Structures are given as C-alpha cells and as structure tokens.
Length: 407
Image 1 (cartoon, rainbow, N blue to C red):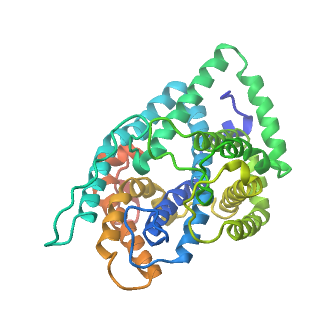
Image 2: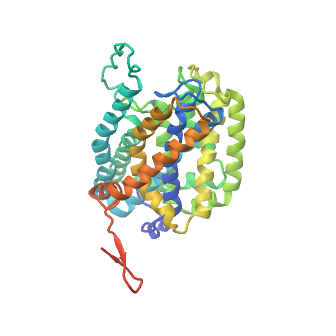
Image 3: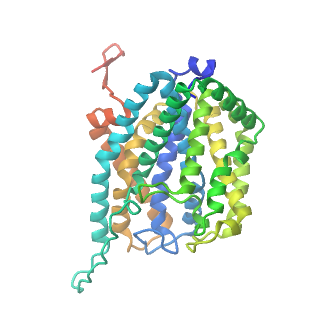
C-alpha cells in the first residue's frame, strides 16, 4: 500500500518545515510535561517537590491529551515519505540507523542515570539510620523499563508493521487498489471534518474495555513491558496510519490549514469540559472504562482536535524555513533522549527549596533545554552521534566575500 498519489511524488524531496516544527514541538512538550510532574498533587512521579500547583496539573493534562498522538501522526507522515523516496530496503536501513541504533545505544546510559538519581533521592538524610530498600521488581517481559525511550520501541513495531503490509500487498498485487480506496476514505472524512470521530474509535474500544483505566491520564503510556498495552497500540497505530495516508494525499494539509481556526477552539472547549468532568487534580484511582463513555469519547475527540488543529495551524503559518525553528527541530531528538535524567536531577536538587512551583518549573525547564542545546551543539550536531540521529552535517564557513562554503 505504498503507492502514492501523483502530487505526493512531486513533493517527496521537499522539506516540510511546518511538520518538522510540529514533530519537534511534540518532543519538546514532553520535556515540559515531565518537568511538571514533580509539582502535581497527589504524587504521581518518583520525585515530589515541596510545592505543588494546580495550574501545572492542568498543563500536564492538556499536553498529555494530544502530544504523542500528534507525534505518531508525524511519524507516519515522514515514514511514508521515506518509503516513497528510498524504497523498502532504504526505508529499513534508515529506520534501523535513526531509531533502532539510538534505542540500543542510549537506553542503558539513560536507565543507569535514572537509577543513580533514584538512589540519591531515596537515600536517608546524613546521620539517619539506613533503611533497607525494597527489592526492585523482577526484570520480566511485563516489567522491562523502557523509560521515556518507549516511543522508539513503539516506532520500530509500527515500522515493522508497515514493512510487512508493504511486502504482503506487493506479493498479492493489491497495494494500488487498497491504497486508492483508503485515500478516498481518508480524504472524504478529512474534507468533511468527520475524521476525528472515526480516528477515536480504536482507542475508544480499547479503553472502554479496560477495567483499570486511569481516566485523568488518558491513553496509558507504554513505558514498561515489551508488549505495548492495547490502548496505546490502538491509539498510536491509528495516528501513524493517518499520518501515512496524509502524506499520500498532501492536499489534505491544505484543508487542515483552512480549518485550524475551528479545530483549536473546539479543542479548548473540549478540554474545559473534560476538566470539569474529572477535576483539575490528578485522579489515580482506577475506573472501569465502560462506566465513562461520554468522557472517554470527548477526551479522545478533544485530543484529536488539538492534533488536527496544530498541524493545520503549522501548515498555514510555518511553511517557510525559519533558521531558529530548523535548529530546534534538529536538536529536539537529542534533547528528548537526554532530558529525563537531567530533569530528575534538577527536580531532586530543588525539591526542598521554598518558592512558587511555577517559578521552579520554569527554572528546571529552562536549564534542561539549555543543557540539551549546548550539548547538542558541542557533542552531537557535527559528530557521529548527530550523523546517527539526523544524518551527517558539515560545518559551513563564511568567506571574505560573504559566501558560505562547507568546511
């Protein structure tokens, strides 16, 4: 099903500056989300700050509604672009280098750093008697700690699924027909603004049947276990598939660009209604999904409204290259990989300090991003690490007559 519409072929070599910015924004919002978690009440994170903030709880809630759904739409979009441009073999090689290698290389480092922070966080005060720590859960398939790098693991599964479908449809000679059929369906639903109501259905079914759903937290994050939980698999694979077909019919981006003014206000209203239904404080008591069908449908539909609206707004406003956004887009992958140990270390360092939660949140976020940007520029951008994450880059120098040359 990787045959593309003629328009897609003509733009396959173009850089989508707007969608690069959306993808980077989804990753950087993750830094803000994890930074906010130490200030939530009741405690939902390993580190609990002395200060708490209902406003930061709302920020967490809103970001979590749409962030990963948006990211996986972008992942599907760029996956189809890559498949279209490089073919099956090139796609597999590229994804193993850009996604598989960082997961294998950085997971042990990140996990070890998190363990160090946890040991410090739970150490007894100086002079206090030590209390034997509870033994960690046994390392099994269900408990394997993917940490925040779970998104790389999930991407590998989604890429693998795309490859299998590509091979099967090519062998059966049905790819073109199925592609045209789904292009027509996705196109009709998008142009009639019914797409969100359809895209929520897989995740709705999975969460409706979930007997232990944490309704305040939406789709459960698959950060532990080698088997991705059913709601996350349903929701994120749907988002990936929509992004895949969005690239096949790129004129649909134009429709979203014309309709963002409707999607974003609808998302804001839906968010307010959802918060009125469940409250602005985290609810960590499990609930049966089938007992909350109205909230479940509205929550998912609101999340998709955020996603479609933000993609449309970016396509309307950010199509031209912006050097700052381009640099942030390039750096965002590294910043996200790096950020959890940095955030946790900073949260630990200031957790007992007096001060407004919002100010401490802003300080942690700013320092984390600055560390990420500085380390990216010095250690990553022009090194083999950068070549793995984003492709090889060469430094440019400006000559005396003002021309740029590659160093």
